Length: 166
Image 1 (cartoon, rainbow, N blue to C red):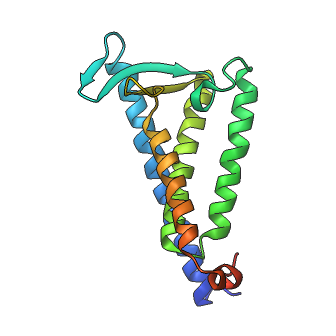
Image 2 (tube, rainbow, N blue to C red):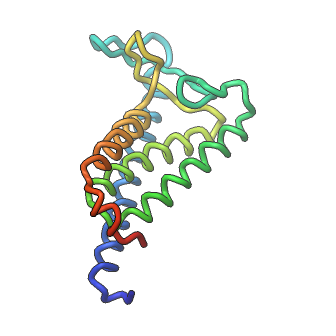
């Protein structure tokens, strides 16, 4: 494939768009975490079904691995984030929707990784009372993951067999 190959140009544009979306997603979460760190110490802010409550999670989802050394959790989450990035890169030529969903997952994962790399914990600030406290990156990861799964069901076997992966 050459740089003038329409398929290569299309794939490059999708990859660039995915990178921009991942950066915007990560930036939104990191901005919200910075705000939470300055605005939420002390009493929670009640907003009906949701409250804003500052918390710090040394583990991963549901505090799994919270007793592990920070470097282990950072390495593990870094490898997973890298895997998502490689998968997003390889699938970018397929569909816009799948690429966008993976970019949102990547942005959320990267934001949590950057946050954790600072001091070994992830900043959480959204609390429902019936679910562990979470953050915007977690919302991006879950929603992007669900969208990726839903979109994979939508594709036909023929599309799966004949989609170029670059």
